[in-house]
Image (cartoon, rainbow, N blue to C red; front, side, top):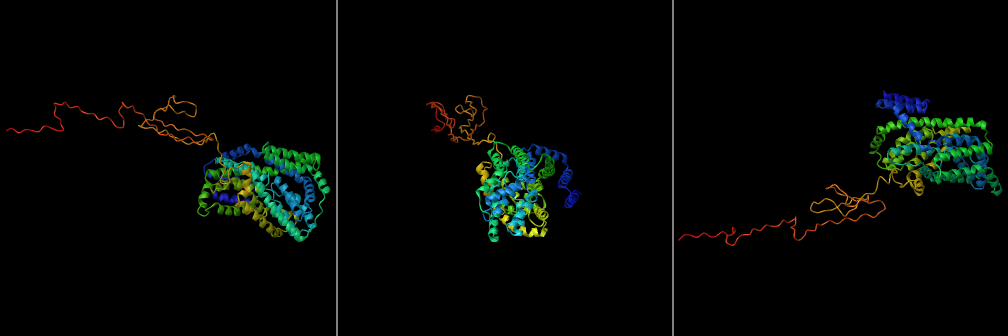
Length: 543
C-alpha cells in the first residue's frame, strides 16, 4: 500500500503538485511504514537548518540579486564592458558572458538572468551582425553560467547540505573550500565559450569599435559603485576577516544603498515588490529543504546509500566508471528539476555514496553544479530552453537546435572538471582549506588523537615491578606508587623525535649469592671411616 501511495504522489508531481508536498509525503509514508515518528525528523531538520551558519546568507544574497535585476545595473555593465572589450574580435560575446555570470552568481540560475538581460542583449547581438542562431544559443547558455563562481547561492546551499552529511560521518566540509574550488572551473567554461565566440565573430565579420581611453573612463566612472562590488565581496570572503552571513549582509546593504540613494533606479516604494519576489524564491527553497532533509535522514537511517553501494559495486568497479554514470544521471536531474530542488533531493544520496568510491566532497560539488549548468539547456525539458522560448518568442524546437553546439563546448569543460580533480582542488589546497585531493576531509582533533608509539620495558626473571629510573609524561618521578604487574608505555608527543628502544635490564647478582637460574648443588660429606655407597665393599668368602 505504501508503494502505491508513493507512486501516486510521484504521478501527481507530473501534473503540478508542489515538490515539497511530494517529498514530505514520501517521508511521512516511509516513516509510518518503518515504525518511526516522522515529526521528529522534520523538527530535527528545522533545527539543523536554523543552526547552520550560512543559512542566513541565502535570503540576503537572493535579495541583492533581485535588486540588481530590477534596476539598470545590466545597462551600465554592458556599456562598461563594451568600452573595454569592444575592440576585440568576439568582444561582445565576452562581455555578455561576463555580465550574465555576474547576475547568475546572485540569482542562482533561476531564469532571472535570461529574463532580465535577454531582451536587452539580443537586439545588440543582431545589430552587430551575429547569426541569429548563435545569438539565441549564446543567451540560453549564458543563463546558467556563474554557478561555480563565488559567492554563488547554489555553492552555499550545497555546502550547507553536504556539510551536514559529512559532519554526521565525522568529517568536515568548509564552504570557503567550495568558493576556492569553483574559481578555475567557472573561468574555464567562460574561456571556452569566449574562444568560440571569437571564432564566430571573425567568420561573421562583425563590426568592432575603436578603443578609446575617454569612453572607458566615462563608463568606469558611471559604474564605479557596481564595478567595485565583486572586488569587495571576494576580498571579504577570502580574507577571513568576516563570516559568510556578514558578507551577505554587507552585499545586500551595499546594493540597496547604491540603487536607491545613489543611482536612484529604485524607490523605497518599490521595496515591498522586490522583497516579495525574492522571498517567494527563498520560501520555496526553505520549505523544500526541510522536507528533503527529513527524507534524507530516514533514508540514511535505513542505510540506503550503503545498500546502493553494495548493489552497484559488481557493475561499477572504479570511481571513473562511477563518475561517468553520475554525469549522465545528473544531466537528467538538471533537465527535470530546478537547481535548488536538485541539490536538496539528490545531494543527500550521492554524497555518502561518492565517498565510498574515494571522491572528495568538494570535487563532487563542482561536478554536481557543472552538470546542472548543462542540464538547464539539455533537450527536451531543460528549463532555460522554455524560458528563452518565452523571452525571445521563438519555438522550443528552434531552441533545441541552437543549444546543441553549446552543449558540446560545455561538455568538454565538464569532462575536464570531472576527470582532472586538480582543476577543482588545486586552489583549495593552496589556500589550506583542504589537506588532500584524495578522499574526504577527516575531522580530527589534535588534542584527542596524538601520535602514540608504545615502548615496552623489558625485564628479566619475571620482574615486572617498579621502575625507579623512568619518569612518566606528567612529571611524576619513579618514586610514585604504581600498581605491580602492569607494563608501562611511554608516549611520543607530536613534534618530538621517537624514543630509543630501551635495552633489556640485567639483574646484577652478587658473587656470594647463588644464581636463581642455576641452583647450587648440595654436596654430601662422607666420613673417611664410612664406605661410600657408590663403591660398596666387596664381600669376602669364608675359608
